[in-house]
Structure formats: C-alpha cells, structure tokens
Image (cartoon, rainbow, N blue to C red; front, top):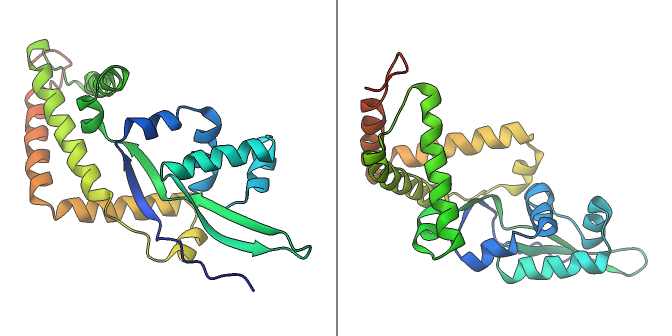
Length: 214
C-alpha cells in the first residue's frame, strides 16, 4: 500500500528573495526541471531523466540541490511490482517570481539585474506614448518597485487547496483562475490600492496621445 500524501499544499506563487536560491536556478537543467516539468506535475527521477535526456544519477543530484533550497519536495512514494520504491517530486509552487525589492537591496550582479529589469519595463511604456524624463526615472523606479513588491507579497499568500482538481485543469484555465484570485486579493488590500493609484497617476501624467513629450 502506498503511504498517504502528506506533502504541504502547493502555493500558487512563491517569491524568491534569497540570492543563493536564485543562483541555483541559473543552472539550465535545474531551471528546466522546475519550470517546465515540476510546476505542472509530480514526476520521478527516471521520468525526468527520460524527459530531458539526462542520466538519472545526474538528475537526482539536481533534485537534491533543488530540495535543499526549498524549490522542490517529495510528495509521495510508490512501490512497483518489482519491489522498487519510486519517489515522486514536484515544485513547491505553481509559479516563481524573483523578489525585486530584495534583489535591489543586494550587492553586485543581482542588484544590477533587478534595476535593469525595472528600467526596461518603464522604458517599454514609450510604445504606448509614455515617456519618463531622466530626472523622474528614480521616482518611477521607486514607485514600480514598491507596487510589484506589494503585489508579490499578497499573491504569495494564495494556496491551492484542491490540488487534484487543479491538476485536471488546462494550463489556460490554471492561469485564468490564478489571475482572477490574485485580482480579488490585491483589490482588498488598501496599501496596494494606494500604491497603484499613485503609479497610475504618475504614468498618466507622462502620457501623450500623439507620441510627443507632455
């Protein structure tokens, strides 16, 4: 008889703030294991090895590293007809995001990566006629950082209660359900709403319908 599944409930969103955890995901094989496979279903080391074309021993080492930083956990075991015990693993969350605020507070490459990402997001708004002057860019970065950070804090509290039903949904249904629930959560948070109003007013003040600077 298989032991009962006693693994923790899967989170809808996990915010990664530890630089050492982020570095673990810089490895392409580990990122593939988590983001392509284990966020979607539970799998054994052999199944993963077959899927990505790697040696099971190599995959197991990656799994152990991912477990050590809390990105993957064992959810159940199953005994085959030959007596071999298979261990099934899955990601601890459906989606992972990098904690922008924590990365900006870090030193070196992590800080530069976070700032560059936010800057590029803001610069991309020019496609919609939004131009942020150089002397207001620091304000824009600060507001967007706080808004994203608050949204992540709220969204990371969501937990998938019915994992079996969740797994029966299509990818599109999962994304839609997740987005709807996150919208409900943030809409009830006064701090988030204040930050969002401030950001929207800032962006609107730099919006030009004809593509020229305000």
